[in-house]
Length: 187
Image (cartoon, rainbow, N blue to C red; front, side, top):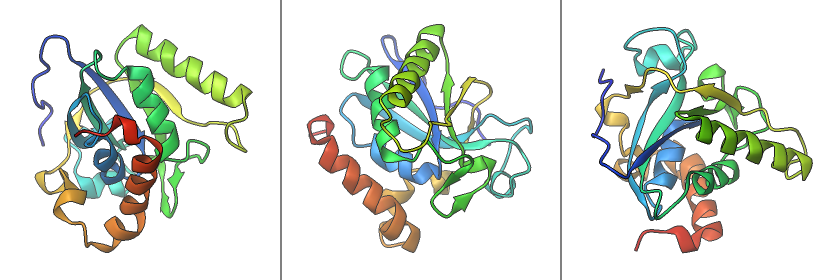
């Protein structure tokens, strides 16, 4: 298991988000103008070098997450979070659709006090505006050790578009994103 990913270049920033299966978030964020790279992996647990099987078993404390490297001059952290809150359900605790367990929790792992403040402010605003029928339960936590997922989980949707989960779960989320955020798509 790798803990280091593509190096961050000067002027780039990182966001780490968990919103259910990492295949869904990776497929969405890969298409956004200003996003340099997206890696699927694990964050928020206590076990070193977790495997997919261990994380899916719910015994490591990790969430399936994506680590997004982006150019803040093209897309802001707040805009990345606004997309995040549209492409998953932030009101279900430890669940996204049929995926259940803490590994599928909604979480924002912030790297700076500014990222924390932006996330807190958005959640407060969305709850006050009753954007969702239920309160947002997204966990906010300081980013800790990142573990990149196994190679066959990277670019999973691109590599496996006909796989059942991709057709019935990932594909509809990507379509929803593309419709609502067409102006944000890469050329």
